[in-house]
Image (cartoon, rainbow, N blue to C red; front, top):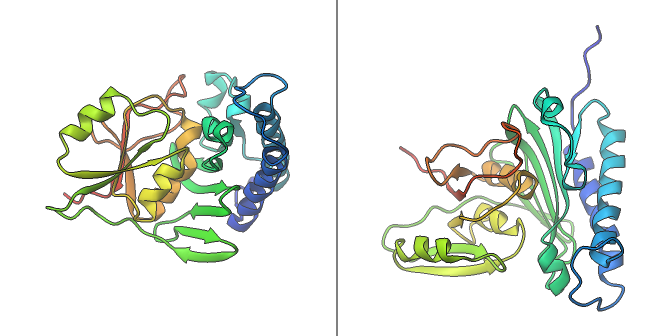
Length: 262
């Protein structure tokens, strides 16, 4: 039996994310479409589906042997998913509230999962013209206007205020309680998976997510954080956040930070 080709060209995946972002921007820039949530004919749904269809088609062309799980096709049964060792996990439009608010803080997320771990991630923020990329450790990059810059996490310095990034739209009582126990801190508000990328590039030292997220929300940026020398761990027990280990696609609460050396 011939071996199946599971190799991936990172530059081609970056190009897919940028092309999907262009599809989104074409709709985003049409007009001021107001506070419309997802409905069958809303600009948000139109952008989401346009991005989803492009990514699905391109990934199927590039890597036909690797299955794909997208937020827009998340009804694949667990009985099938649990047989996957290597698969694409994508969110065609992360940050729907940011899209509606027109603040630019939304992203296209494409991740490659291998044995429950994100081993490649591309996070593209089309309205900001910025892309974050991570593959193997030490390879994390931020790309702005075609210029690539290596990025890495910056650990917290004892005695200094924490630089904490939090959700612009989902801050709740649990976060306030967590922050009150942290000591002095500066809070940066941000939308979508950009929050994880801010930790990856050293602009924030900690991102506590103590509310609901799905696996496609985090996987791509998780790979960037890993490649930048950081980690994403379960808040309750400090164990690494893993993917496709259960029927539910919801993540537990988690922390994003520089690797804590023991």
